[in-house]
Length: 309
Length: 264
Image (cartoon, rainbow over all chains, first blue to last red; front, side, top):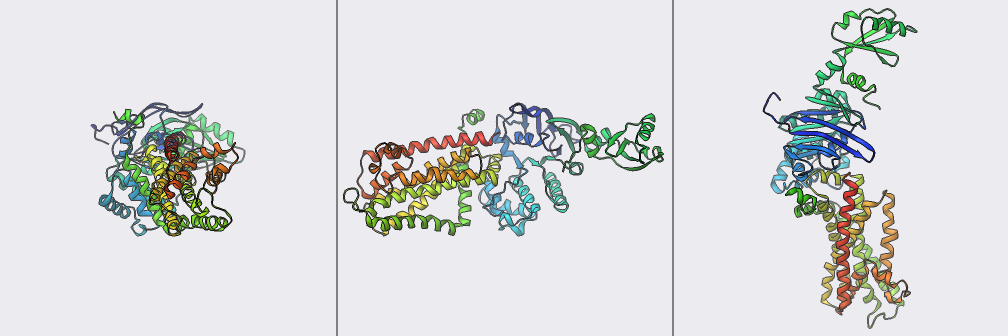
């Protein structure tokens, strides 16, 4: 990404999607550079899936344009799909075929057949740790294995761009880590990854850059660290006032020039490291300090929790 | 250029039709014993029960034909309908709504026109398999008198194209999985019984005869009977053309309705 000559491999310009009177995506712009892991972070209904479906040309664009690898998605949908690998939120695995057959059947749609397909399937099964399950039927696989198989399938065709919708939703922490590991390896093998997520930890760990989306808009963009620094400082003080002293504590903090945000029964103040000494002793309240996260960023931008589970 | 072709629906890769067909073949091979048994068993039971059970009580029916000889080609043609209808309605709905593999395919460089064609051609392949099996049995039972009957095989395939297309049309407009049953009870069953397979359409009330003749299976039953006896007339050509016309209407209809449903 330090390569100044690099042109974006994905470019969305004024991208909009209306379903009747409902505006799912409200004119967004973003660029993804080759080799990046680019994230779209936002709650359900933010417009992430709709955007990804437009990128993979299975959803018509209402207004605006998308370019992938220099191709206009609306003009050359098939050529675009030749170059991308899509992992939808549902697995879309073929339950009537076994693991190996899922891979070679998919590859055939990209005109990869015969020996080349067999070879690649073997590579992919090994790469994604599924070589011992080649002949298994899909319903015997665990959730993590299924997700890895969808990654293997998307990667069968050596796509330049991999589009992943919520790659770790529904996985246990162990499987999630394994999927993350493999996304890094996919990227290291030269692919660009565009992924959506509503896990702030996933966005923070994986993404080089990300956009924060809500209600069809992009609210903010940057590297995870920059976003946190910009919108939530580096440190968060969580202040829990003693019984009945909330208003007094709040006034005192505000008089000292702090921006105080309510978080249910407690309040938070963001700021630099110095916060630790400044707020070490507040009368009538207990204070805890923690590192600010993307969750704070999202809360500050929208006033809502990112994950509503 | 590609843009124009795409918009006109002319950017068509036959290799993708084959790819979809091959997917079905692989799935079929996985459970071939069960599937093949049902392919052969059901029509065989119908042939035995109707042909030899009921047939005992029926006098010669049209000219010198015994009832068994009359009913056999009808049963062959009529049984080509079920596997195609089943694959492209119930089966297609499963793949589309529950397994979401249509979404997988169209996110890959498969166009819906190719997907629909692959589904229908596979439905027709299954129809052809059933036709071959039942034709063989009927021949062994001595119910087929003309070598022209071999042509019932491609006819069965054509029946499959018609009902595959019809099934896919229904799958793309059916609101729920539960409503998929209706195509069998309200459409498949009356077509099966009233297309002249089991009794001549002339024996129906004259007011409903045109309806029976318009049914999408009637032409095929008529042609199959002509081929099995070797006595052909112009009416058989009309029947054939009608089937071809239906197939060529259902396919684009299925493709357009699928597009309306899936490309949103």
